[in-house]
Length: 508
Image 1 (cartoon, rainbow, N blue to C red):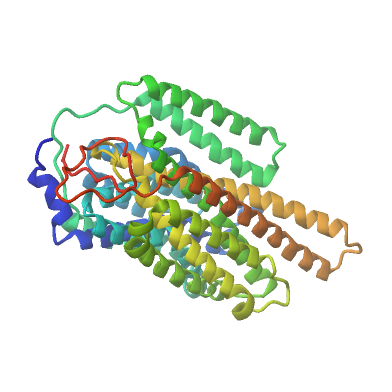
Image 2: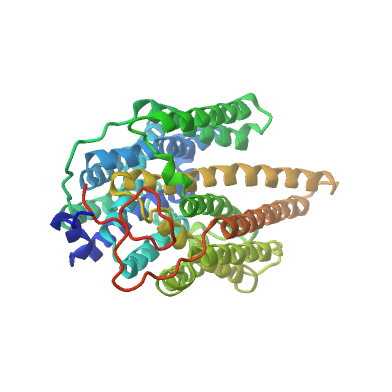
């Protein structure tokens, strides 16, 4: 094995690496919170731009379609053109799209701006994680860095609810988009100064055009199908037709990757047992998380009568526990126990929190009945996300760090789409059945039906996390024993063989 070149060692051992983490964390926060910060602004935007309830979903769907379908392409682009360049392009593009959305004077322009945000977000999100993966190679420092990153990935949605409430009430719905420009300016300056630009050596790999088209179309159809399941139902042709098309395209993508000379996503990345378990855990946790943010938000605002700001503040205890647990998990427990213990533990804790939420009714109080389950959920997510994200990118060759990182975001995005569609459908069905069995229909019956529908969603969310506990316990390998002192480092490979396989440090 050749010795690490100076260019390869410098990023990992530079004193600027923690400032690189701060820069990457800002970018990740901007992408994650954008998924929920706009939700709070929707009623005000609808009143201002005069679009219908039926059109409202496209403000969310336009972003998720572009983001979800282009993630793997974005991750591979960062591998091809260099991560610093891709990171800055993603930041600038996301900021310009946000400014365009903030200035929108029509529904069509706002939808276009949201789609543009999603496209640049698909470049920015995997690049940010790839920068982190290739900057922190020391196991202890890597754990701390991924603890911060995982906490942001888990808590960003709740931060978006709080920030969205403040900006909408105190300023304007447009500031839910303009805030990205403030964050982006700081992040671009940080990227220019602190993010290392490691030069590539050897021939530049080619972009897998057929693979890119197949997987982008498959992910587009998947997200589009689940989006229509929310509005048109599972029996609608547009819903199941797109889901079937997605399955066919994904099979075609896998078959093509087996024979492509320059595959977009080498199958060894996802077929590695630990990484496969990590991607599955992120997907399942993403599906369950929407039961937290979506239905607890509905409950607080419609049943308890909270304002948007009060609703956002209500999630702060959960965020605090998530951040604390993420740091304890990655710095103390994960190195000792490994993901095979930490991820199933987090799934069980999160399932417990979801079950406790099912006891909420119209007379429940926040301090006694809402806050404890949210704090428990924070502990669960703080155990799941950092361990899964760190394992998902561990041992990946630097040539493919971007696309491996994109798989993390893809898993979370697909999980969110599945969770939103399934939980919304199940909750709506539960509410309808409740009203039908409690005639005559009064305002109290409608209120009780809403609470009953939320409870149904929480039970299914608990089931998601319980499934995640079983899957992660079965798939993750047991933690490998530490290598003997002085043993030679393993050669870089696209597939690792243990939980603590060393991260490659050779620049390509």
